[in-house]
Length: 317
Image (tube, rainbow, N blue to C red; front, side, top):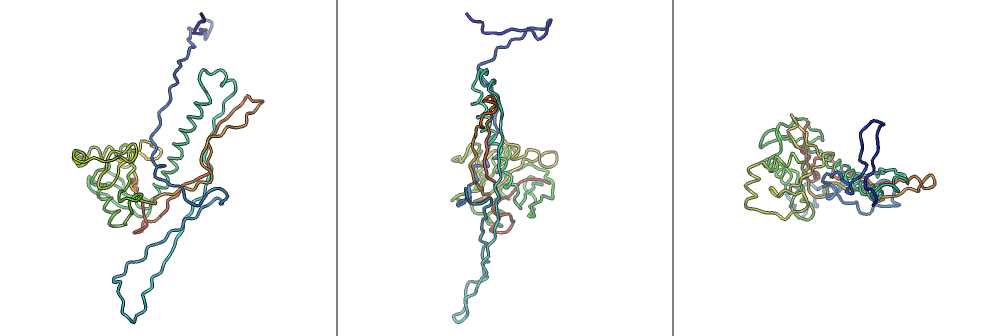
């Protein structure tokens, strides 16, 4: 019967080492990725369409004090204006090299494991890239007490947060989005989406108002990680700290987050990300696998204007 173990000396007078390997390969856990769920590819753009897609945005007409006019008067004329923004695609990708010997001698499927980990890396990387334009929102909300906070509308938070997120803050943000800047609900509904870091979600979970509400109401969850709905805001936990930080504000008191409605961030895709195997080198002894895509993300409305802004970024100076 063959010996299942291989023994050797690491030095003439050293200790014995057991070189047997477990048949189970442990794998590192992944952070939950959520931002890509709420980004849609810009229609009409793809291969053979240049490196940049221009997005046209129609501004609102001003509501008149009165919509009436006299019979012999000319119909009042309002100016209609368009604005544009653009997204220029970039290459995204990474690669892993390995040798023919390592593949031949490894007791597990080396290529399969490499491809699996590359797909995981791709998912995390693109999720972080998608989060960036969400956090580029011009409107920042900084919690400064249990029930209130400060809105900055120039794209830069100028106040330091002294409090983690609470249900009262979500109520303030919801009313601001609904009544002040008139953000349309996500999709075809009237609900807003909140992607919050784990620390921000903890602030919500600990709030007695959240606990009390969930004794009597339920919700049909939209995506994995949704912890509930507050004031028509669906709260979704993100534990991907490259996308949303847990260390904002004074003494790292605040968890970062974004609350948004419809048409918040767009994606331009010239070539979908995919795994590719390199042509083997050195007579087939050297191999490589990569994930590569040609795409990029951009905020659609990079303003704080009423009727245009779509995102509020919860953060701190």
